[in-house]
Image (tube, rainbow over all chains, first blue to last red; front, top):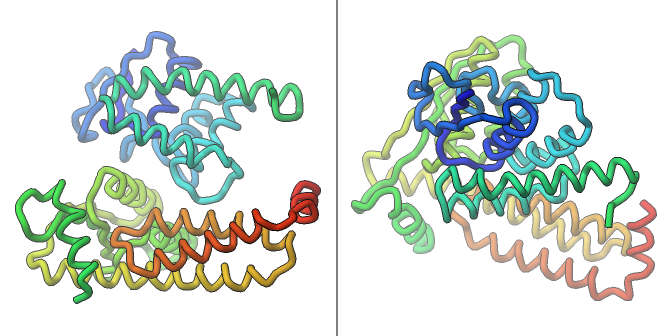
Length: 143
Length: 186
C-alpha cells in the first residue's frame, strides 16, 4: 500500500511511518508531499492537515493512528507519550527522553532527505520499543 | 530601535528572504463560535504556547518556517473541528518598520517571561535543598518552553540563563545527600 505524508519529516511523521511499517503494512511505501492536494489517489494520507490520521483534539498523529487502528499494545502507548511530548511539548506526559528524541530527528532532517530520515529513525524506534517492552516486563529500568 | 533587534530581524531571516527587507510570516485567521467556550480556551492556550503575535481579533502571526507553519495548520484544523472558520496565510510585512514593530512586541513578551523566570530562580535559591532540586527541574522545563517560542531573543534571555545556571550550580555543589535522598524518595 502507499501512504502519503507531509514532506520535511520530523518526530511525529517518522514515528508514524515506523508504526505503519511494523504494525500495519510491512510493504508500506511512503510518498512525501508539500500540499495535501498532491496526495496520490491510491495513497492513505497521514499527519497532514484535514485528514483522518492527523492531529485530533489533544492527540498527535501517532496517537490518532493507534486509536483508529485499535492498537492497544502498552509499549506502543508508552512510545506515543515520547512522540507526543517531542512533537507538542505540552507536558501532558512525563517523557524525559522526548526533547532528546526531537533534537535527533531535527538534526537528521538537516543532513538527509525524508527517505534517509525514515531509514535511520526506524532502528531507533525499534530500540525504543525493545527498551520499553523490557521495562514493562521487568517493572523497572532494564540494564 | 534596539540595535540587537535590528540585527535579529535582518540576519535571522536572510535564509528565507535573500533580498533585503521584511521576511515571511505565517498568519492564522480564525473565527470561533462564542459558545461553547471550551474550544476558545484551548485555542487561546495553544496560541500562547506558540508565542504568536496577535495582529487583530482573530488574526495571529509567527515568523514563517516549516515548524511554525505546521503548528498553525494544526490549530486551523482544531478551529474547523469546533465549527469555526480558519485560514492560513503566508505574508510579508510591507515595510521593515512594521516587521520590527512586530518583532519588538514579541521580544518584549518573551523578555517578561525570562524576567519572571530569573526571579523564580532567585527566590528558589533561598529555599530548602529538596525544594531547590525540584525548582531546578521545573524551571529548566519552563526555560525550554520559553526558548521554543522565542524568535527574537531579548537580552533578558541571558540574565535568565545565568540565574538558572547559578541555581543549578548551587544545587549540584551542595553536599547533597540530603537533597538527593529527598528527591529519590519523593
